[in-house]
Length: 386
Image (cartoon, rainbow, N blue to C red; front, side):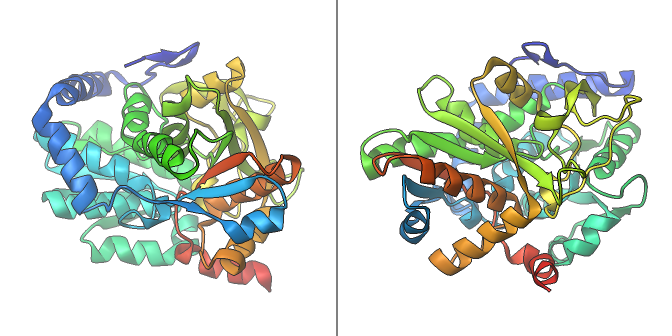
């Protein structure tokens, strides 16, 4: 389990959290070797989570692009409507193994909060979720889902009242309640060992892509595409393919305009420390964390997982930013062409995939990780259309 990815990663945390992080790493190392843990994770992933998710040929979207074939990895069909369940289940089982009766989590788009609430209910763990008040307003359906599932949702009023601030509030709670509480961090960010743990639980996505693509079209894809905020669905897609020849493309939130900068930390940021890890961070001229802006709550984060920073610097993965209006266009394309409502987060990846498909021969295959479904975003999309 790497503590660093090149120069990125590490654990820049208060001393109070060091024993908890060490306990988490020890528990995870033991669980990985425990056949009973692996069996329970696999069983609940299937019977509660609904895995494996299908690989779907988007025939009409391919026709729109007029080039390479576009296939969708349907993580929107996981229980709860997003890939977040994969990691929430794994960490929930680790919390139970450590004897921690309380889960806390942060959420932006609400999908991680919903997944944590579902897992907390299934495992009998008390669940509390921190969410920026701006995100609570634009993601109201998910707030209600969390509450119906028994979770307490805490609005965060500090800072920009979005995902960065929710993570900060959750970390403060963890410092105060570290003996009884597990912080179920939702993305491949934060201090070691969280980026490695999240990547391993989410790697079920890439492992399924490997065998499903071989069965569907006889080989690995030429390109895989995934959206990147913190980067959990993307690293889960990329990780099992790192040692292949498959091209890797991560797509960040470009925001409303070039002036806004969006939330594209890999495209516009520079190395720094945020939430316990050294990685790419959006910063102003004074080195302070810069404001972010995106139509997508789940991508509205000022940094990125340290493994993505390393993949960018080494050139193994390529990253680009897609603007709000283009993500909204892709949302409409998939709805009208395929009868599927994507979340706004993977809509960024869909737009980039269509653009890539237009440049490539028909014999190539592109797989896009459709990380979540879009019913949570209907109000946002409707407002944007007015």
